[in-house]
Image (cartoon, one colour):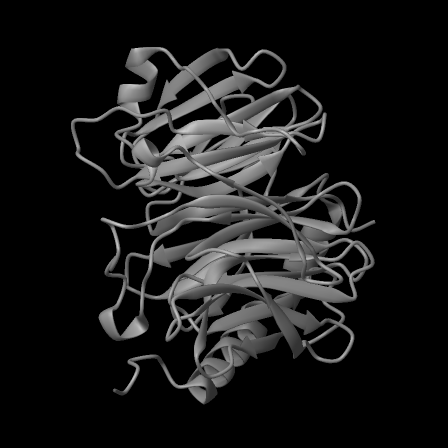
Length: 368
C-alpha cells in the first residue's frame, strides 16, 4: 500500500527556500542581542506552516517556513544550531543556525520510518537522536544522525516500546530517558490509534552509545491506557512526565509523575479540581531549575499548573485558552496558546492573532 507521505524532495525544496527568504540581517542582530530567545512551531491563519524565534518580550524576531506542521525544537549549544521536527507522522526535520553562518538543512526520514516530533543532541553536539516509528513493525526506534556530516543517518536502536515520543539526555551525558506512549500508529491510517485496548506505555532508560536497555518501567495494568508523552528534568535530576489518557472519559487518573533512576514511577496526587481541569490531557512539561518548579499545560482543559519540584505540591494554576507551549522564563514560565497569545514569566502578554502556536516551546540561552 502506498504510504501517503509528502515527497521528500518537496520538503527539501520548500524548507530551504522559505527559510532563506525569511532571514533578515536585522533579525539576526536582534536575536543575538537578546538575553534569551524562544523557538516554537506554528500554523498561520492562512494555512501556512513554520517555526518562529521569539524574544523574551514575546516579539517575533524571525520566522522559518516549513512545508507542513512542526512540533518540537531542540538546540545544540556547541554549534549554535537548532532542529525543528515535523509533527507525527512527518518525514522532515529542518536544521537552522541562530548565528546566521550556515544555510538551513533539511533532514528526511528514511523509508519505513517517520519522526515523532522530538529529538536531542549529544553533549558534544556530534550526534542528534530522534524518536521514530518503525511503522510496519509497530516498533519504536531512535534514529542517530551525524551532526558533523550533514546529519547523515548513521544508525538506530530500539526504544523497547511502541509509540516513542519525547526523549531526554540525562546528566551523565550517556543515558537517554524515553517516553514510550504505547500507542500503535501507521501513516497509511494517518494519526489513527490502532491498539487502544492493548496499549502498553513505558518509561525507559537506554545507553545511547550501545543502545542497551538500562531500565524499563511500566504503569500498573489498570493504567495501561495512560500514555506517557512529554518530559523535562528538574534541578535535582528528577525526570517529570505528563500523560494523556485514552480510557473512559469519565475517569480521572493521575496525569503527572516523576521518575528517578532505580525507583518505580511516582504519580502525583493532585487536587481534584486541578486534575479535572486537565481533561485527561497534558500537552507540555517544563522545569525551571532556577525556581525549583515544574509546569504542565493542557490545551484540552485551557489550563496551566505550576508545581513545587521538591514537594510535588501544586503552587498555582492559570486559565489560558488552548495553552500548550511552555518554557522557563525568569522565575516563572513563558507560555503560548492556540489563540495566538504569548504570556511571559512576569505575566506580561502579547497577542499574535495570525499565529496558532503549536504544542511546544524551547528556551535558548544567548548565543554569545
